[in-house]
Amino acid sequence: MEPMTTDTSDPQPLFKSAPSRAIKEINRRRTFAIISHPDAGKTTLTEKLLLFGGAIKEAGAVKSRKTERKATSDFLSIEQERGISVSSSVMKFNYKDYEINLLDTPGHRDFSEDTYRVLTAVDCAVMIIDSAKGVEPQTRKLMEVCRMRNTPIITFINKLDREGMDPLSLFEDIEEKLQIECTPITWPIGMGKRFKGVYHLSRQELGLFSAGYTPKSGDGIVITDLEDRELDRHLGSQARELRDDIELIQGAADPFDMDEYLKGSQTPVFFGSAINNFGVREMLDSFVEIAPAPGIRRTSTREVSPEEPAFSGFTFKIQANMDPAHRDRIAFFRICSGKFTRGMKVRHHRINKDVILSNATIFMARERSNIDEAWPGDIIGIHNHGTIKIGDTFTEKEPLKFIGIPSFAPEHFRRVILRNPMKTKALQKGLMQLAEEGTIQVFRPRINNDYILGAVGVLQFDVTMARLGAEYGVEATHETVDLSVARWITCHDKDRFKEFLGKNEASVATDSEGCTAFLTTSEYQLGFAVEAWPGIEFHKTREYN
Image 1 (tube, helix red, strand yellow):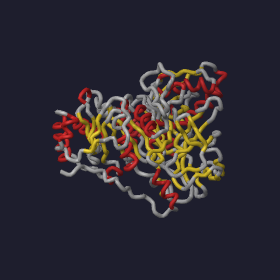
Image 2: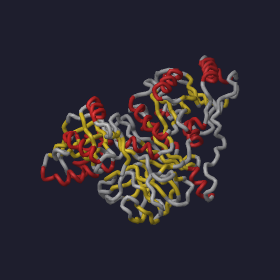
Image 3: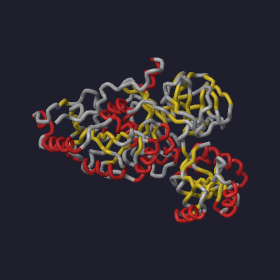
Image 4: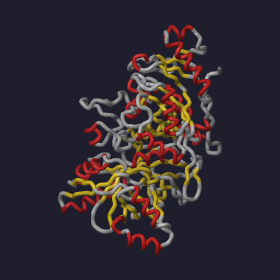
């Protein structure tokens, strides 16, 4: 039987009408995020990708906090203290003449909606699965967001150096829980103490495992015929197991289909051990070939192609005080079309003003450098003095509004308790700025002056309190409140909406964007309200204004 192939030896350029320089730069870009459940190896894989890309010389200590070295992608003090990632960061590196923008998402089980929103700014994602645990809850949540945009997914099954589920059981678990077809690109030979390496199905190469070894391109042993006795020499008795496995999967698994993958309905699968550098390069080599270049983005009026000469882009993240010494605020900006050049004038459409982008930066986690030019797919940082919000669109001329940058209904709630009433204004300023970042959501009930915080993960409440103290000088804490569900509400009938607000005043609040929300104690109570008030629309997500 013929070996499976990724059919990626000569990827076709996406755009042919733009100037040749623009075509080249667009097709060199790869912008992606890594998604996983905590402890599946996300931070480790991120560091190894940066290592192979030459962006760092030494991977950070992931498991131990006794050393001075920290994971490159963690820059908040709470991250360094706890050894976890709680805020998304952006890292840029080169690999094989490709420009790669990696958006690293928090790896803790209690993450912010910042994690969700980052996925709206990428063109594909790498999903990490722990071979011993299979699909876990946070991965399922993140996949739901990827489904909103049919984001292409590449899967890396990690920790093969430990005992885990057999590969076919892992495939079954992924396909059943995530509703995405798996097609193997590499195949493992054993696991745990019997882990010998992987066989690359399309390249017909055998990669032999050794702990801590850093493989180089061309290191693989070419085995074009699985009956070759060379296989037995390297694998011993496990050679027969590999032959049987390959025969089985070639008969049972569908070959890699680029169209199905780009639609988000099929995922190519790689196996390895990120902590030992193994299998990462094989995945990265295929990633730069099959990951999509920047594509079309939707606005409220039309679709925007990256090949268009006019510059456009949108803000998907705000991060305050990345450098506490300068009290700065950076807007993370995804370029969608045209070319960015230092000092260019663009229109900030929400406030209807022209601004000059004179000091844009690229990121290597907390390290930044100024740039003179950037292209579609690139993520740049813009210094923000409080005028830029998530979802803001910038163009050279045409008034556009990029859509699909949602705010998600929170799942957990707390009431803020201020220790010093003299700090009320500082508290208000801090909460509003943190809400603009998407760290938390802030609701003001109609019936009192409380500040109710909402988040998709409870860790964000501690993050908020820590940052209020460190960045705004506000000593505050939080307490539980009898709420568990929030929905934004709209109604086409103004009189009906006014009636609803009057009769449900105790459950109505206004968020930091001025949008009206319905807060209640349970899904049951929400269902009761939905049934009792036809014509009132309850929304789990909303677009940023």
